[in-house]
Length: 388
Ligand SMILES: [Fe+2]
Image (tube, rainbow, N blue to C red):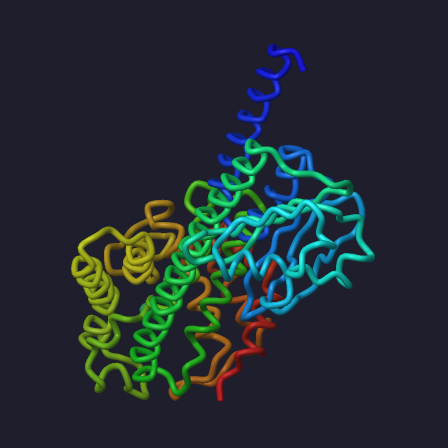
């Protein structure tokens, strides 16, 4: 080969190797690591086949391959009886020009294949977690350059697999923290609720009503600024809307009859008490939490009314955050259709009529329009999470 052509081949190989290394560094899953090796390794070392072998509980798992005809994809062999196992157990690269002249090769497994020569490189030499094999259909000794390339591929795959494991454990830890947070929120909300209601399903129902109403709003192009990307947070924070009721005395909270003016004044403080409790939690956290910020907003504003006659601040119209307006509809619907110790449950259609009549008075008119379109879903949710 003329020297210019050889230089070009070397440059092309170096470029392909860099590309492979870069792609491996960006892989976020084991499948992705194997896919990069499968797609790019074979042409790089001009082999007729490559395999990606994983060390799996004392077995060599031939997890992936790219070859001119099938090799052993999906099969498992004991570490002691195959050459990838030998490479992993010894932490050494193996080059075999004539596989049928080498006792370490399980000849029966190779006979149905095209393989005459091979090179096997352990992935993570000091403590191998896998191996990459290259195979040729004719007797062949890979060049130093090809072995160097295979070694670099194996090293990059080792780093990528470590990254994948770290990345996945990070995700698992984050998901665990999320689940713990959700559980704590539900536990806190349930504590508040058990003082007020006979069962623990009001918060679960209101959470689902909020989901239905918020998603329906977004689907119809309402409240995009406030809802896009925050619906999950809204749903998660909704259970805390009445957390402030833990600060209301039993004599008022559990009173069977209507509250007098003084008692109602105390009752109304639950909105501010809830906001303060959640703000305290956020302060304790030492960092701003979008979820707790939204929970404060809902706890504080779910008793505001569109016409300005609500509490605690008498906010009016769009000055009331959309989260509070949505929770108001969800909360009132559930109160109407549920039996309480001081009142019977109303039929679904009567509750719908009451909410429709409050369009533009108690409730945001646009939200009432959306509610009327999805009211059947509210009924289904109420039936599904029925009290008792
Ligand atoms: Fe409330």
